[in-house]
Amino acid sequence: MSSTEPRYNLLTRIIHLGLMLFGTLAWLTSGLADDHDQADHLGFTVHSWIGMSLVLFIFARIVYGFFGPPLMRFANWLPYTKERLVQSWTDIRALLKLQMPERPAHEGIAGLVQTFGLLVFSWSAITGSLMFILLEPGTKAKGFVHFVKELHEISDGLIPLFLILHVGAVILHALLKHPIWRRMF
Image (cartoon, rainbow, N blue to C red; front, side, top):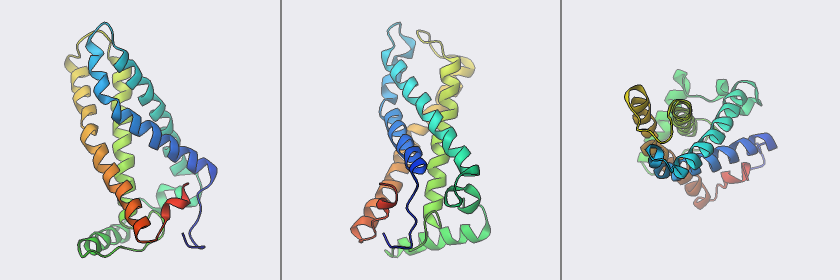
């Protein structure tokens, strides 16, 4: 980490740790939730409460994205402007040429990947919350609840994709002697 790279404050680190911990645990325990239609549904209960903990951290991250420090605000890094999208595509082309893009935190492909992750975990949190509210444990999901369950299960494939991209980038940076992980830990 260079002396010009910002180090994240304690609240940023806590939110990231909560997202990392509860997001990963929710994904890892998703298979346990298949017992929701049985009278004994401990797996569903465990997964549900881990997921609801994730909801709190997602909510905190979204609030932080609007009112937190400038580096963490969505207005400063979400790739929705033409310039930021061009940076992302430039970074993708560089990676395809086996070149590592060098940008400040949250810019270019890093902002794109982090936006993807936030969207995936928000999707999971919203659909999971609906399941938590609407699904009656011990009964089979039917109709709208079944539809929400199917929507929720989309995140089972997207979360590992995000983790591969995000953790893979951190590992690649570390191997190239750019220890960006030190900003967070």
